[in-house]
Image (cartoon, rainbow, N blue to C red; front, side, top):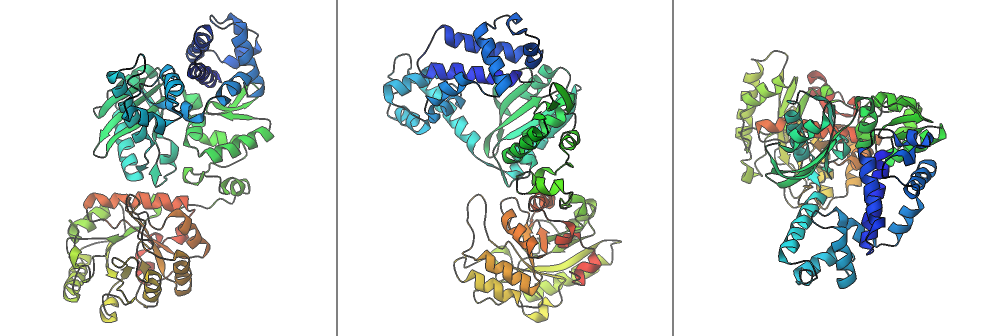
Length: 568
């Protein structure tokens, strides 16, 4: 159905005409056509085919001709003509709450505003408030609208986005009418940061579901509340986050989920494939002419194009479609393939959970093992262990391991790489460990590459921790040549870490792919200091999937026996 596409086009034409300063019949006609098409229950393509467009109350011959033009060509000359004559920055201003097309026209005509920065300037200097029909109160509302808009443009850490969407989905599942439910967008593709939060659902009485959604206890403001779509701001400890819910028909759910998951580049490639096969693909389904041949599930949609279902994390148009056509997609790692967490801190250093408690939590997660990797003595700011304290920890782990059945605690350490590349413990200590995770924690600008390469020469080092040292929210990382680090890992047989802590996710997917090409093993660790942090492993797995990593690429997929015997 093209109803909503056309409704949006006519609405945007009305906006654009108002920005240009036009008023009266033309603007009213386009806005009316938009409302009619938004509420029309019949498929507009069927109506047009049956020559019944002008039977729709409110649709005249002019609007009818434009509808037919779009349905036949996929374009509308009037739409292109109107939008091309307006600065793009002005059109973007329409996305700001409390800012209408008439106000944009006035600000552009009288104050030469061409975009957001210009608008903020005339608000700041007071000139916008002095315009006819404005005033302080209206300007204050526009300022609030700008704040909301800019916050919505901020990218959200994946951990925060997932936590929020899971809370909202749990809330929605309490509605008896709800059917299928799934996140979409970049969150479903597990990007390390998310632009917006989209949820897709099916269910009877969509208007009631949307009403329930907008009454979520965390909602601070309702931005939109319609029959099939709702948009709200939800307060979190990081500020307000926008969440959108869309209700679709069961028969369209798979097509809509595929479409709204993206990525844009992936979808463009699929549309091209569909066209070559004489098909059309949209959020409503896959069509051959007027006949819908797929749409209920993603499997149906991809099958109609001669493809297996491509995992969401791979949908970036980086060759995944070409490999899928040859049935050569990588069998990317699943969360269920992970047998243990290989970087966890206990209360022996700066963690907040005992080793015994960590072991019990790991067993509840279905793990076969967990690696305790507390800080070494140089990290005195983090309660780093002296050699004596580490030996005591080893004894405690040995005692605990005797009490478990089909589970083991690995004796490990996150050992500092010192300024000259030496390790913080001598080999007499390191050789007693199952896992040595070597890490840079100081001197980020001091010969980091050389220090890491020297650490790799130590026969007892298993893994290089968080190799770039970045913190996504606030730090670029070390002054390090990661290409040389990859070469060093390839030559020495050392593993590199994919640190699953959401603000690290280090290595990133670009270098993980390079590591995969060089057959370098990857170790996933949450680096957690808290009990709940163990669940961050899924973010590491998500990034691993985005990098096309398979079980054979990841140490965590090995059995305990193979891992401690270094069979990799």
